[in-house]
Image 1 (cartoon, helix red, strand yellow):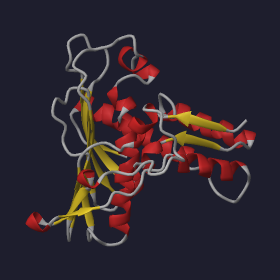
Image 2 (cartoon, rainbow, N blue to C red; image 1 turned 45 degrees about the vertical axis):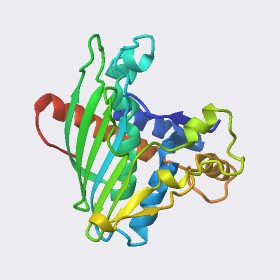
Image 3 (tube, helix red, strand yellow; image 1 turned 90 degrees about the vertical axis):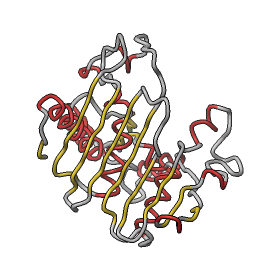
Amino acid sequence: MHVVIDKPLAPSAVEAEQVASAAASAGVVASVFHNRRWDGDFLTLRRLAENGSLGELRRLESRFERWRPEVDVDKWREGGGPEDAGGVLFDLGPHVIDQALELLGPARSVYAEVRSVRPGARVDDDFFVALEHESGARSHLWGTMVAAQPGPRLRALGSEAAFVKWGLDVQEAALRAGAHPTDPGFGEEPREAWGLLGAEERAEPVPTEPGRYVEFYERMERAIRGRAEPSPVPLEAGIATLRVIEAARRSAAEGAVIPL
């Protein structure tokens, strides 16, 4: 049976490697559900990076910030420990880490601050992760449950221009409201939500690419049908994300930069 595994792929990189080995031995198509690769804002940033609009991309700032000041221990993400993949670093971390690795390439070092700040919190609810990539670019990544005022979702700084985008991708809210991916206009953002591209006062709105979570499943179908296409997100990407998470925990505990 072919497999799609929600993020994180496993509670540890070792266990994730065991999953990958088992999938390979069984000859099945397996993928980790890093669906945020198909967020409209990230698709837009990829387009701008690939077409040279930013010049050399030197720094990525990426945030998933929520305002949940009260702990809900009935939710496994807030009640389980690291062995259960609980905590915000396991919950929101894969989104920002996978996007950074996908855009800027492998990381060679990790610095992190991971903490619990809400009264009664049993797991981490606030993190900052800084990656130095092998390309020389840097990523600054945040996830938190205590952001009463969120920062920009994305800020990408290049040698020629910057791209700044506020607000979350619209697909999840649309799906919760009963929309379907085949509906006309699904995944499209209104003009007032577009990000800005440019330098200082010369920044101009840039149309957001339509979000396409459905592409994950389209690619999975083609991989299963043997159309010479890999799984939409290889398990190796989930393993790389977990290695960063483990290095982040170690960095926070030791107060040190951890090489990968």
